[in-house]
Length: 349
Image (cartoon, rainbow, N blue to C red; front, side):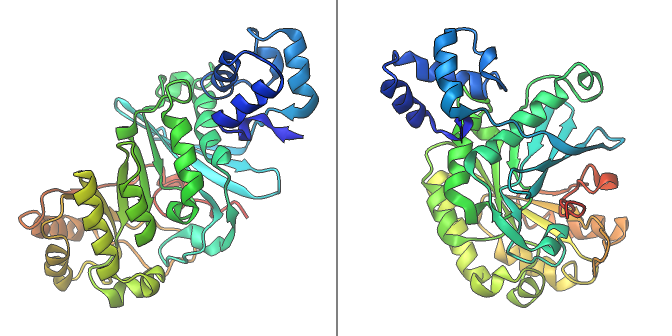
């Protein structure tokens, strides 16, 4: 049977038309599925019993329950979701003052093999369907807003969604764009476009396509090196798409969108925080509307790198401040439960 939640709004409209129902029934169904998060047809009380019976004859309503839920002392919660075919992904809820962010995965595993990322050790299994991506937000919302958890998990609506979990979003571009539409839709999950960020390790063609996506969503780029030799060593994707090609696509994105890009820079001691990296970063990012997030490496078993000492991180940031419009040092939350940047999915297998 088909999962009703896997149908796009236009497909739901076609379904309702085929059943001879009024046009507004499609919006009712969409609202039940995404805004209200229905898990059974019985919940759809503004549909008659006969209509619910017709739907139940040919459709199910998908509901992904977490295999494991871990909470850190800082309030971060990591969810491990099992999918129908045996694949698994992880999502993270990050409360921070007035923001309640969900970090979602777009692939089971990842094909890019970045050396500082725990997910890379899993290899690649498959792309997620658009509804599997969007449903992570719905499942996390249901959990953190439940009476059992809301008191300790920053109650309130989800305010931000970041595509920074397992996988490379730009290699699953069409599904990501469809998921954004539902996450943003006011009868869907209702997250504002400016509060949705897609991260990429650097897929130039998809970045150019994303520049023309009509919603005012944001772009983050996992940069992590200031020269091709270093970046190719720690991020094999750079061998296919070197920095010159990547930066050209980013400059095009900024020109088309007139929107600041965030560069993520995971600091690896002695690898990308050298004296030469300060000047090279300044030259590489010169003239680009951007923010640079420095992220000390989050450790994981088997990692060949280590994070610089705290004083070295601060010194690196101080040297960059005069050269770039915005430089921040970001400490990932949830590191104790392997929910920080680069730590997801280490225990899924």
